[in-house]
Length: 395
Ligand code: MLT
Image (cartoon, rainbow, N blue to C red):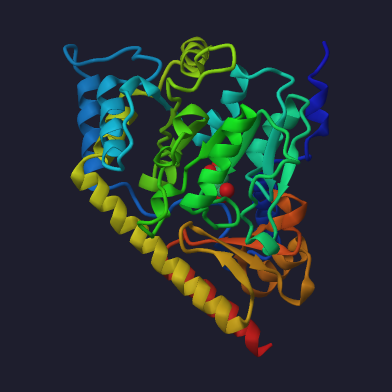
């Protein structure tokens, strides 16, 4: 028996597992201290009523002979794919329903997509970056090229000729920095990818937070993107599906390799072999998200999280702590006070305020001296956290 040796090159634990373990240790040591988590991007608002009603109805159907369903289509039921296609039509993006492939979420799709590319493919991604992109490439023995995202470029690196990559990851709005590319900047990436014959893996998991009509919600709003980009989307942050699990990936049929092979065909082929589809009940719930009622409930939830983000932002301003993001994304990327390292700041906030953050260095070297805070907790908890932060001023 021999293991995949590349697993030994990984950081010992997945970032969010380390944060959770450290938080548990702290709770065991100080059981009397109350903890407020502004760390992992997990939602707190419950599912919209229309989604719960769809879940109930679909569960009842599953218990009756005439409406029971077994295996569904591996790429998802046509009614859900069509509902999503209609959502894109409203953005001015025209997609065939079989260009939309339903899955259990963006995390798995962003990793599984690597199956359809050459083992020797070269990869570029931001530093700091969502650790899943990096870890899944390390698992395959790939050493990515990093696109340096720093305060100097507002954490939004742009293409240049030093980048040599077959696969370019872009998360927009960005996790962890919470910043967002505009139309012109994305156009530069699309033009670059087309020139280089590269594919962009575009993670749009946070697109629902974009709060400016001039910013593109989908990369397909950018000219030429259907020829070079795969868009990965999730209902987790958009509709509170972190526990239900449903997402989708768009692989346009125009997206072909130099040899003329369709990536849409390859991805469908991969999914048909390795995935049995998302459960009928969850797909009915997802369909309800794309109804008028579903979409307006979601807006209310997003407005709720935005209020949290504004409150945290105002608190940081009072403290004089520099930060980025927090407007078009549920994350604030905060420069650690007093030049602390990310982990020193993590310990400081936990010890002094009982606040759990995510250390920026966990997202890459350029994340050192930063922490990430999220607006996903309840308003009551967020307000309590902000009060605790303000008390630091008096220390
Ligand atoms: C995060 O906190 O970065 C995300 O919630 C993690 C994820 O979506 O897997």
